[in-house]
Length: 154
Image (tube, rainbow, N blue to C red; front, side, top):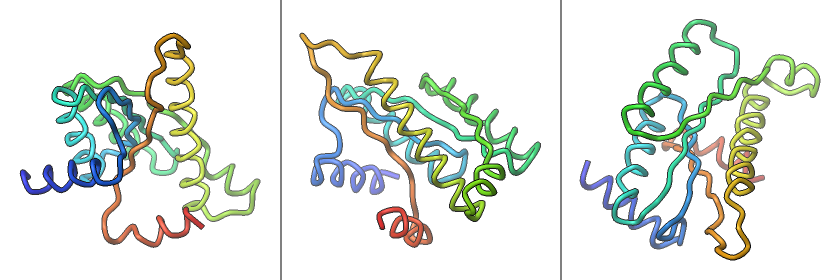
C-alpha cells in the first residue's frame, strides 16, 4: 500500500492536482477502486490539510444490491469522518429520453451530479475576502477503464 500511496502523492504533485488546503469531491461507488481513492485522499487530510467530501450516485438499476452499495458507502464515510451525499438518478429514463445506452447515460448523470456537488461546495464557502482553492473532483479508474476515460474526454 505504501508504494500506491507514494505514486498517488507523486502524481498529485507532478500534475498540480491538489494544493495544501484544497477541497476534493470523491466519487465513491463502493468498489475497490473508489474505496482505495477515498482512503488515499483521507491520508492527505492531515499533512496537506485537504478537505474531502464523498458522493455516491445511485443509478437505480440494480435494486437491493445498489441499496447495499449506498449503505456501505455511508457506513465507510462515517468511519472515515467524511461527509457523504447519496444522489439518486434515473438512468433508464434519461437513457430513453436522450436515446443513449444505459452505460453512457449513467456516466453522464454521474459526472453531472459530481459537478453539482462541487459547485454547491464552492457556493457555500464563497468568501471574497478569503478565496479558497477551487473544488476538485476525483474519480477512480483502473486499466480496464481507459476506454471510458477516452470517450469522456472526446
